Length: 194
Image 1 (cartoon, rainbow, N blue to C red):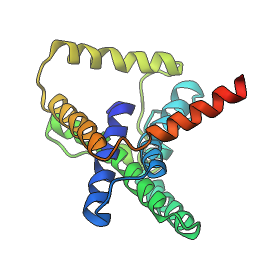
Image 2: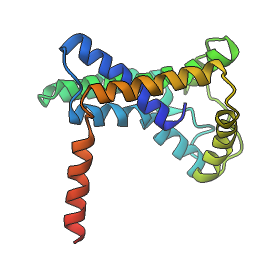
Image 3: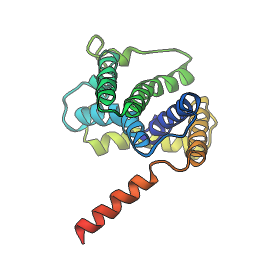
Image 4: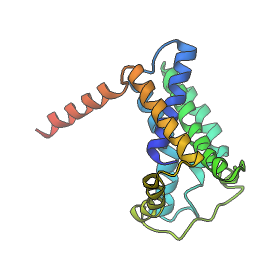
């Protein structure tokens, strides 16, 4: 999945939990946390691989189940101790759903459930040759874009489209959470720069 797909997938999961458990829509800050958590593994591992040559591939520390579990528990405890348990819940849903989002397309294209890339450092995945962050993105994005433009309805593409439509629909129903936060942030930035 691409970062925007991970974010949408995380939002769908979190919104559904909010509606089922709290009988309410996600809040402004929870939405920001779930979106950040849902893309964080790629931000860390892809950057450290492509740009800084720290890992052998873009699947390492931040994608590891062995790191994810204690990280999610730790963030949850910190959020709860700070009186913001919904922020911990948002992180606990967004971050692991990133890992699910990496496994799901592999299953849809090959029919095999594979989690080897989630077992770092027990299993170290070798990636393509190291490139800059921009080159790594381009190397992976061009085939994705070609598949989208070709409109070949592969199972993975249909699932990604379904997740995208569900996320946008839920976001509208939820009252556009996160928009006011972005507007406030932009207004504050504009005032500081003026």
